[in-house]
Length: 243
Length: 243
DNA sequence: CTCAGTTATTCTCAATCCGAGTTGTTCTAC
DNA sequence: GTAGAACAACTCGGATTGAGAATAACTGAG
Image 1 (cartoon, helix red, strand yellow):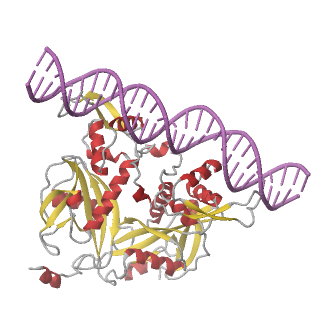
Image 2 (tube, each protein chain N blue to C red):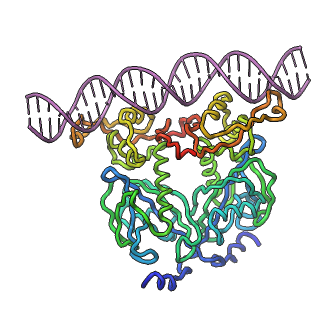
Image 3 (cartoon, rainbow over the protein chains, first blue to last red):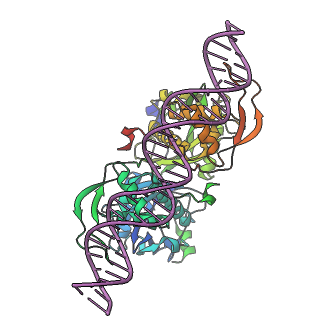
């Protein structure tokens, strides 16, 4: 049997049916806190429960499926950075059938309120600390997304995806503070950001008004062309995470 | 319709058939060079072509499916470190049907020659530089696996998965040299490995005979309890990789 | 207007880390 | 024995880092 004959005789329905979904962990910063985009499911299974936006993969590739779900269920899309996170396929994670979910991670600057659509009854930004318990195994997926985001802040310019086109060093620092959950030394952060090649570049301009409670006008920067930060901006290692 | 009624009426065959496979990038070091485990496919599609070992996911979870494929097609298993790499699901990546592949990454110390089985006509260790062109989109998966491995050497004790239970600092250094493709300064590497908490711990013993061409007996170490290396063991940044 | 409070930015200083090279020692091959 | 090789330890100068402080620009209250 040659390749052509093999393909003509191949029966794609020979195996147990199995579905593939994409689920998206979308992170942004609002009110100085890290938020995740959730939907409240309108239909079974887990009707009424919060969940990550997601849905079944149809004809397009995985990246596009993730993009489509984000748009359909929440009305968001512009200027989000999207990357694959991991896949989850334990039998029994979906009561309907065997479902393998390819999770995606998305980041965006503070955006408009999401608009529900598709399967979602409502869509909302939830504090990452108070998100769960979520439907399916989405708590686990969210945890993986958070860890990935925290880690990628260290060695990539990902933080610039959380702010607008032009931003101050302080805004950038508040991204790190929100995602890592700890304050950073303002002076050292400033020195470090400017010393890493390609992280940010100056626009020459400054903010119009200074921030809420006084202080000089801050200089504005935009994202540079670096894809990785070298040397990295390491978060202080917590002893308990090392072992 | 409540949850129970919904599930009773749910038709798992309503969607286009779609398969999930696992493919495994297995890396080891032989003859001082980084090798990847490949099979020569015995059946269409891509009969006769080299490919990553893999196969369809059946009842078990993804991790176990990867473990099973590695065992079935190559006879390998003991003491391999296994972790999920990424998923690949472009339409058309498999001529038979829509297939989403969950790729895994495995590391092991230099092992016996693999034994073919299952779909594989033969199994072999190939130099990572001379592996392709592979079947399906496996070149791309292999590239992703290599980049992940190179990166994880920096901030995890992954290198210890490539050597035996007891090893010398030199053996560990040759792992880094093989995976990164560049030699490291022996003295600095030695200092660094011993200074990172939890990377290695001394056994007190030394090698019986010294290495091939002379030199004193080297002290033996085993893997420590650290899960991440802090400070990390950074490879020298190449300018072209930064932008 | 003045002052206290806040913020952006720069500077200082000591501790640490890192790359590169050197030294002393132990072993094998010849 | 001697040369060559490899392990282990040390040195030294430069770069990076954490912590704190100094300087300057701005806001809002009185």
